[in-house]
Amino acid sequence: MTAFVLVSGPFTGGQVWQEVAGRLRESGAEVHPVTLTGLGDRRHLAGPDTGLETHVDDVVRLIDEVDAAELVIVGHDYGIHPVLGAADRRPERITRIVYLDAGMPQDGDVALQLVPDEEVRALVLSQAGPDGDDWRVAPPAADGWQRWGSTDGLSEEALARLTDLASPQPSATFTQPLRLSGALAAVPTSGIFCTASGMSVAKLEGLMSLGMPQLKALADPRVGFFDLDTGHWPMLSRPDDLADILLRAAAGEGHRLTAPAVDEQPGYLRPFALDVPEQARERVGPVDLYLPAGPAEAGAPRPAVLFVHGGPVPETLRPTPRDWTTYVGYGRYAASQGVIGATLDHRLHSLADYPVAAQDVADAVELLRADPRVDGDRIAVWFFSGGGPLSADWLSAPPSWLRCLAASYPILAPLPGWHAVDSRFRPAEALAGAGRLPVVLTRAGLEVPEIAATVEAFVAAAEARRTDLEVIDVPNGHHGFETLDPTDESRGAIERAFRSVLGHLRP
Image (cartoon, rainbow, N blue to C red; front, top):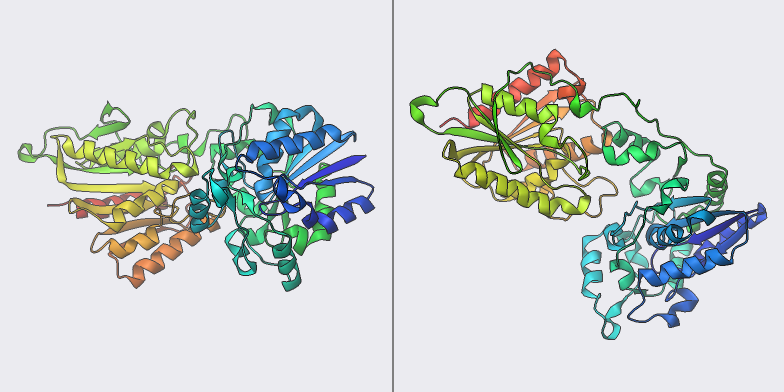
């Protein structure tokens, strides 16, 4: 017999699983909907010290009580945190972990990162103290649930029921970090995307095609994925369909992602589209400088271009981005054109790291401007891929010495599920302060749709504000076309973008 342990998201308890549990039991399964401490009919048990560890203990105790040979444990939204914490302590008891419209938290992550609405995150943080009633976060009213996730598919009756069943959530459950030992590595997993939340199997495959190394583990044959066309509360909007998918997940079904060949060279390490000569390179901390051959005209300092890589990039990945052929190629090409090219390794290792990475970029620019070989009044900053959100700081208040901002196949708004990205990093909104700053944008015609949508929204905002925007299209180019598509079209786009940027760096 298969037993299901069902753990729902914030403010809710076991009652929200009523229809799903009934359907699963009809199939012959054993079902255990969980009401965590402080929620539902256990709300009176909560106190200021009720945190994530309390909920992990709740799930562990239940696991220990279940005798079924096969145990499938399901975590919805916040519920994935106590599910993972408990499964990490009892990995030998778990047959499969199911992520139901949930994030993929790692060791040290907090559940607050999953909350999509920034104002809600700030509210939770303001209530995170141990005194008085501040240790509880009030559940949303009927018209406020969409700030916690898509309400698509919920009837008025279901929404009213969700509201009636909700209870305050102890704030420490949102802010206490998840602790994982790595014991879950061998446990099979399934992911269920509620497509109205913004993610789907097809979209995940698109992101995988970019070669993001942090997604490699999802190509494991023990990992399966499903789509469910509804909003964030499928146990209320599509209970029968959800039950059917859970049964299929328990049976090991689901869409498998294709793993790249073991000997396949990552796209970011393939040869650069342009055949550029080697140039002198100096390494100064996290910054590499590519220096033109020969003295500058009349001994004058030269303009500089800083190339900002994308991400997030795992901290342990080697080689680091400044040694990827794309950025080596751009640095060398800049030097061959008579300007100083600079690359850096910034610390965008997770979605929460944009503020840290932004400071790294600012520090690199100051290092450049302080170098006597650099004309500190003629600087361009060029952003790539997931580094695109970092452009917001420079668009919102461009200094006079920033002569141009460039971006190639950038991500220009948080992608679906990127809830942890601070609202400061919204380039389209930052255009309000860009003034006359020239922007050179290179678009890949075969871009991942989710990324392309952020670029189109940025272009529309730039046109509305009459920003000095030049768009260079690579119709047959992919994200990372400089190494993935070494064609005349790609080479022409790189050369044209450089001509534009260098034109803005002239005295």
